[in-house]
Amino acid sequence: MAQTLTNALSTGRVAHAYLFAGPRGTGKTSTGRLLGKALNCTDRRDGEPCNVCPSCVDFLAGRAMDLIELDAASNRGIDEIRSLREKVAFAPSGDYKVYLIDEVHMLTDAAFNALLKTLEEPPPHVVFILATTEAHKLPATIASRCQRFDFRRIPVAAAVATLEKICEGEGFTCESAALELIARSATGSLRDATNLLDQMATSYGKQLTLDQVRAGLGLIGDERSGSLARIALSDDLGAGLALIASVRDDGLDLRQFQKELIEELRALLMVKSGLDPDEGVTQERRRDLEAAVASVPVPRLLAALRAFGEADLKQDPRALYA
Image (tube, rainbow, N blue to C red; front, top):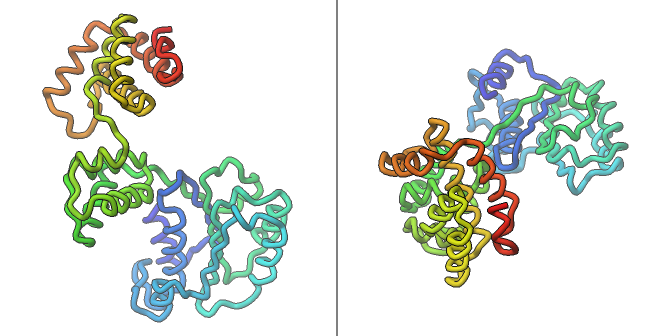
């Protein structure tokens, strides 16, 4: 995607409309802003903005007149789009006037119809960037007039590398395992990962440990989650209920405990399939998982995963053994 956009800038083959689709926190809006900056850079080289020309400085300072952002979640009506249509005819101060519409799927049907007219006959100096987390909700007439780029969830390794750079820049010290835990908790959203890191630093200071991050995220880390996963696979109802009762009596959050159960069962299924359950898994951990599922058929693992996912430990622990 980055290479495609860079080539378009280098060759001058810029589309009049782009659709950035993907999960939240994966960089759609940020990429839109970077594209707007590059389009108006007066000293662009190989598609990259120089960051020193007056246009780039204005973009970096957040005062660029040629970047107009619209949040469709709160400006979803036809009046806002009509106002936009009236303004697109005005010439930009630079080369392009860039309209960045976030959460564009929230627009009403009437607003989409009004936007369609502009997308069909856009002025040559206007570029639209439509960002959405739910691209399937866009009318086909809108999507078909855009170059679409799909954003993926950020891999854990990439998120950890970015968090390490942030820590270095902000003077934080954080254990690698703690950064990995933050990245995993963000489930592919780099924005959520950075927010969690900021929250941990606010709570515990600039020297973060794994235990602090685990406590701050509300994670239990109780070894009994692994024990219960194995008990559930053996259909030992009595032992399972007794273990759940002990967890409850210790005052632990049963819903969070259930999440850790699901993670353990997922790891067992991954090992049964011949895959590594996590990056950097130790040989000892892998041998333990392999031994636990050596005689367990895959259908039983899948059934247990389904039971763990659908049951409510807090309401009815016996549902795990249905």
